[in-house]
Amino acid sequence: MKKLILPVIFLLVLTEVVQSQSFFNDRHNRRFLLTGGAGVSTYYGDLNAPKDILDTELQFAFGIKFMVTPQIGIRSELQFYRIEGSDAIKAFPSTIEYRNLSFFANNKEWNIIGSYDILPAGSRYYQRPPIAPYVMAGIGLTWHRPKAEYQGKSYPLRQYKTEGVSYSPVTVVIPVGIGVKAKVGPYINVALEYGYRKTFTDYLDDVSNRYADPATITDPIGLALWDRGPEVGYEPKTGGERRGNPDKNDSYMILSAKVEYYIPANILNLSDIRRRPPGRRKPNRGFRLFGR
Image (cartoon, rainbow, N blue to C red; front, side, top):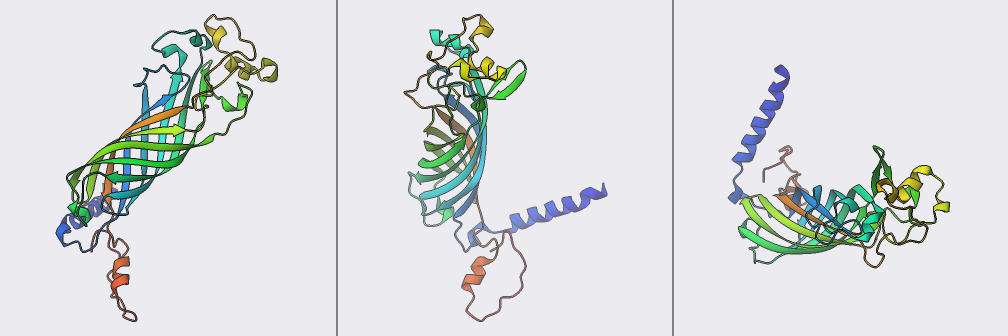
C-alpha cells in the first residue's frame, strides 16, 4: 500500500496543475501536436478478390505534427499494421484459386504527410473550428515481411524465392486520404481518417508473376511453400506457370481513429529565454510542463 502513495500523490498534483491552467491566459500559440491512434488495415493484391474490401486487421500509430499555418500541417508518424490474404477466402471462385496460397505480415510504415484543413481557422490554435474536414498526401516507407503458415509453423516467404526473384523488404509508399477532426477540448482534437497507400512493389504478399523453376529451390520447406495446391488435391505446378498478376502493384488502406494533443509552446521555458533581454539573468522558476 505504501508503494502506491507517492504515485497517487504525483497524479493528484499533476491533475491539479493541469486543471489550474487557464486556457484563455495562454500567451503562446501551440503549433506542435502529439498524435496517436488505432484502427484497421486492409490489403489489396493478388491474394484477395476485388470485393474483399472489409478483410481488416489491426493498426496503430503515433507521431508528431507541426502546424505551418492555421490550416496547413505537416506530420510524421510511425505506423504498425497487419495485413493478410488467402485464396481460400476469396468471394468468387476462379481457376487462380488452385494456387491455395496465403500470407500474413506484421508491417511498419514511416511517413511524412501534409494536411490541409478545408474550413478557415483563426490565427491562434484555440480559434480552430469545432469540426474540420481535411485532405492529406505525403510520402513514406513501408517494411514488409510476408509469412505463411505451414504445418503449424510460420515461415518468412522472401528468403525462399518462390518466384525465382529477390525483392526488397522496403518500398516507397504514397499515402493519400481524407479525414474529419473535432475539437473536444482546448488542447485536444479527435479525428476519423481514411488513408490509401499506393506502393511500388507487387510483393507485399510474395505473389506477383510466375512460379520459379522448382529445380532452383533446394530447401524442402521452400519447395512446399512454392506450390500449395497439392495440399488440397490439385496437380503439382511446373516452373513458369502463372502465379499472380504483375501488371498491378499491391496496396493497402488504413482507417483509424486518432487523438491530437497541442504541446505547450514553452514546455521547456524556451519562450522565456527568447523574451529575456541580453545580459539579464532569468529567475530560477524550475521546470514547468503545463504553465506559461
